[in-house]
Length: 60
Ligand SMILES: [Zn+2]
Image 1 (cartoon, rainbow, N blue to C red):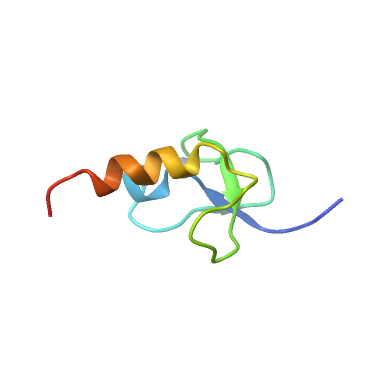
Image 2: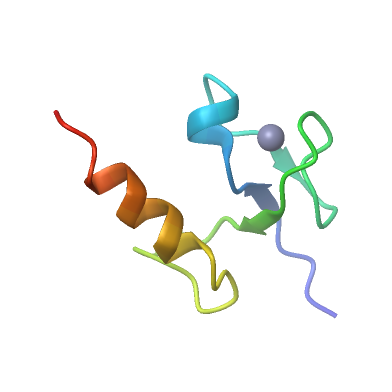
């Protein structure tokens, strides 16, 4: 099993800064925790691209 540190998948909306966890969900807001690897999007986070697309659609 991998032991990668994960980050709250919704931290940009739910928190002022990334919330890291070793679990599968955010300890603060309960959102899914995603791999914190600095990739544009993670294949292990199938909903991440959807969330990012929503963010991109917002006005600057
Ligand atoms: Zn969170």
